[in-house]
Image 1 (cartoon, rainbow, N blue to C red):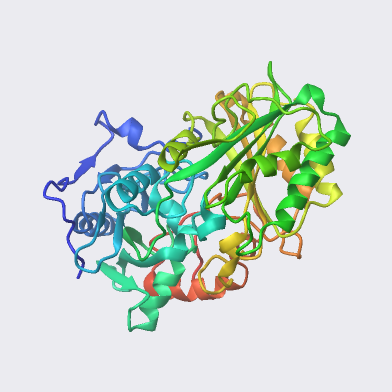
Image 2: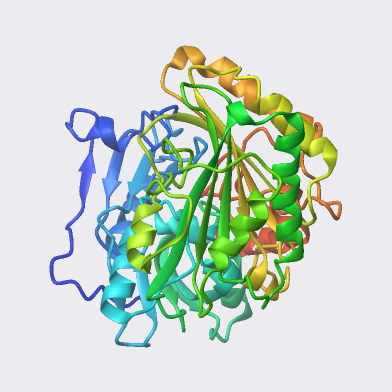
Length: 496
């Protein structure tokens, strides 16, 4: 049995067919490369409606995909010609569940829903992402991380229970709640699989419950600085990247003095009227001046830093300044939102355990310094990692990467479909120049890829995303989705 929503005004659900004015919007994701042609979109307002929508689709012989926030980087939702997209966007509540005392986040909530309700109503938060229009459903099931993760760990480190709509071996849809307290080991395994095993694999999560989340910070130190490409040559670029990587390799311990500091280096391509590389740093904690200390280390021996001239990548740049300012934390979180406009995009990822080898930095220089894509916004974003993230073992949740110091996101954005091929070729060549055809296979320096940034080009994606956790995820798949009802191009496979 599932606990009903506390809302008195539950949306009654609707089926949106191709002749409906809402259909063109509902068959598109944030990435404008993906436009679907499903038979209809089922808008659901509570768990019962999801169960009925799943059963209706099954009875009609339709393939099922589903959407929380719509930010999936690949075509895992919209690519469902003639099928059914189940849309959870009407399910966006965030509340303290009176039955168990846990904080409940519904499957259609966005991260902004989560932050504002948890902070304003309860004074707590979860260490989740900076792009707050992202849906909580996809973010949480991928593991979830953000600017508080070095201080508090991953989002799933606080995930205590989920409610899942699944399909049993007889083809019947049902809802079940599972938690870390469940007496059945199969149920506990199902919860574990949702702590980083990726979305769209086992069923539709309609609610997440978080237990003992950290207090929401009152204030945060924040700064964004920039280096003009015109002031950089290969030597100074190399120094900048190596100093950044070295600093993180030395300051990513579980409880170090800089665990409250999270940084984002945007290596933007050298293109446009005012090309810059930008660096954002946020600090939350009892000390003061941590951001300026870090920026002083980064600036030593490099060309003069300046204020950012334009927004870049995501999160966007903040107010033009070269020193830290102290602001209320929720305002900082709002400021750093970087979802940006809907565009065409392609993304790749990797984890770093150690500092960058010289070959990586050379590949970055060659890909970014030439200005090869004047019609695009292309960059490599290098986020800090480690801290409390690494306090959890690689098998305690489904997130296997628990010894990294940095997480990399390769990005390219464009508007015109005519530029598809050159953008895809650019990011593919850049990635291959860093890691070879096999990708960033865990080797003590790199540590695979982030399932939250899916990439259909990856060879051996099972190992790159999940490492040794993959067989256990397959066993969960066999138990809870034996008919492989919930599937996409990189969904967990049934065991042989």
